[in-house]
Amino acid sequence: MKQKNKKYLVLKLLILLGFIANIPLNAAVIKLNTGEEISGVILKRTGKCIQIRVSGENKEYKIEDIQEIKGRKPVFFVHKKIWTGNTAQMFKEGLRTASKGFFLHAQEIFCELLETNPADIHVKGALSIIGGVCASRISEDYALNLFKGAYYYLEGEYQKSIEAYERVIEINPKNIDIYYNLGNAYQAIGDADKAIKCYKKLISHKPEDFSAIYKIGVCYYYAGNYAESIQYFEKVEEEFSDNPDYLSLIGMANYSIGNYTKGKILLNKAIRHYIDYGKDAKAKKINNLLGEKEIERLLENFH
Image (cartoon, rainbow, N blue to C red):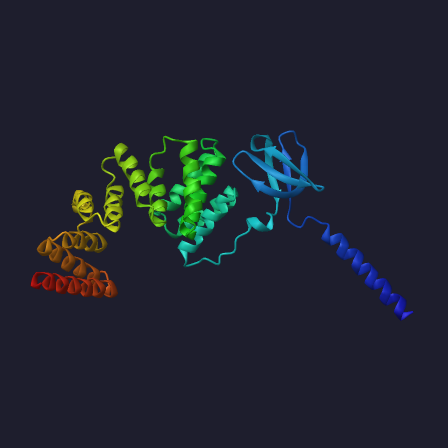
């Protein structure tokens, strides 16, 4: 009798577990303007429509036809606050989420980030893009590629970032600012020529984009074209006069073409700023490099 009861309980438990397995635990109820209610699992939300699985079938409903959404979110919409104190990681997660088309979830992440730092222009920019999608001012494809470009760049997948940004330009050739991002991606893979073309395209429309001008100088410097790099570095002298990275590059560029006195002055200034910013390792590196270059110069003159 006890054995029968045991089998009965096991059978009952299996039936119950089978029933639970078929329940859409992350179900939501969409109420249409007509009053009709559809129960299912939300698969995707965008600014224009919601995709929901109903009885094994995927269906889409336009946002304008929906009156209300009730119920819990699917698992992939839930984000734990594991990034507290690591805003860079959280921002990257927001980009990744948006790059997958989950704009509303990404919006939640970016809004949480904005609470931490209300002045963050990058977060504000991301929210502005999502807002544009929701208001149908920006196409989903355009927004997806913007987020993909940024996310892939941060992940070090520069070729994918380039492809995404080139798609952005293809969709909207008037977005001149994107050439800066594209230039950065080309620079990251060592294609200085294409990077310079992108930066020059940008400054042809925005002559006072000092960051792009500086980046051209950087590209020429690492390509070994020191004289050309100095021409661009000098155009942004006022804006970057306290930037030790800028000072070290223009200092080395001058030193490399034989302007030793000016080069030494700029490099010593870079060292002082590195120390002021607590970057002693960089200050030491520049100091050692300066010493090596000085010895090379003296030996060259000696011979």
